[in-house]
Amino acid sequence: MKKLIYIALTIIVVTLTSCMQNGGNIGYLYGQWRLEEVVHDNVTTACDTVFFSFQSDVFQIRKIIYDTYDYSVFMGLYQHQDDVIKFNIYNHNSKEILSDEDKQIALSDISSLYIDTLFPLFNIIKLDNRYMTLEYNDNLYYFKKLN
Image (cartoon, rainbow, N blue to C red; front, side):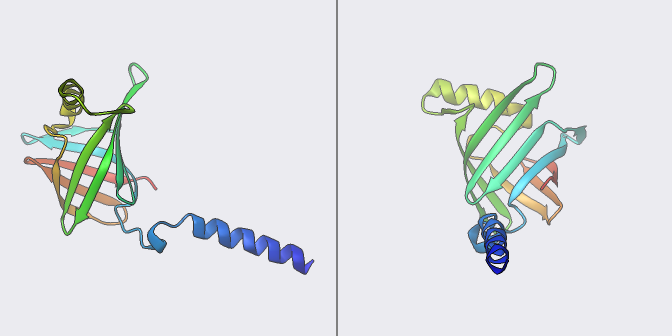
């Protein structure tokens, strides 16, 4: 019986510690965020089809198109320092962005979010364990954390 309890406790400890990132110090940015609203030219647009995910130094932006059951995915590396997040988008829909044509296709696709470069620099207006507000080129992006 003691052996069974020891095995059960070992499994629980291993499972819990394997879920932690960066020694448990993952910060507020870690996880998946749903874009709730975008403010562009003082017009607020509701949004529930765009998700930003952060883990370690990797990010993913996923845009879902419900009408066609399609989606676009942008991936890359980011740096979070003080109140700034610097993105380096290098992958679009599982394809590395290498050529000028790849770059133009990716930029065209992400332009619906008012992003005009593959290296956007977002200012963090608010970041806590539930909500995040980012600013880029005078646009405001309001997020809610999902996990």
